[in-house]
Image 1 (cartoon, helix red, strand yellow):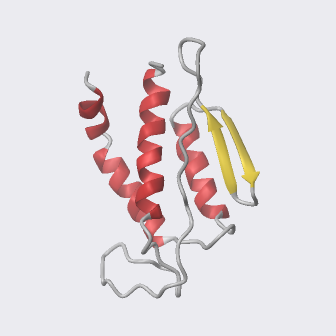
Image 2 (tube, rainbow, N blue to C red):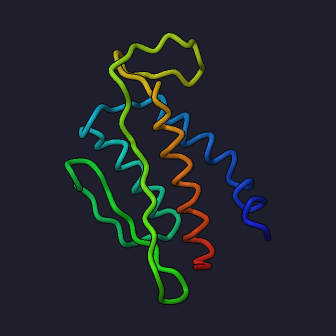
Image 3 (cartoon, rainbow, N blue to C red):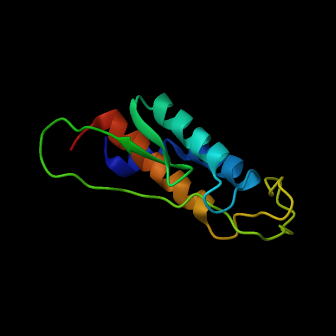
Length: 124
């Protein structure tokens, strides 16, 4: 199945992940709940090598491909901004004075989608 079609099948999950992240923003290096959410998703995808506590609340996950060769790193920012959300969105921030106005909720979600696909196929 083409990559785009397979990843498109993740759309509803990815929407739910982004909305969860948007509703639960954390600032700076204090993203412990966000990191836990990401790590749980990674484990759901079958990724077992996850290192947490990097730079306080970051994490690194390793996905091994089918063959030896070069490696690549993908990274996402997870932190939000100290802004009061006034969008009125159904999935608006539930944390006073904090909001993902920066797009990092989307950035994290996109990388989770990529990790899911890579862990599923290991075609690299």
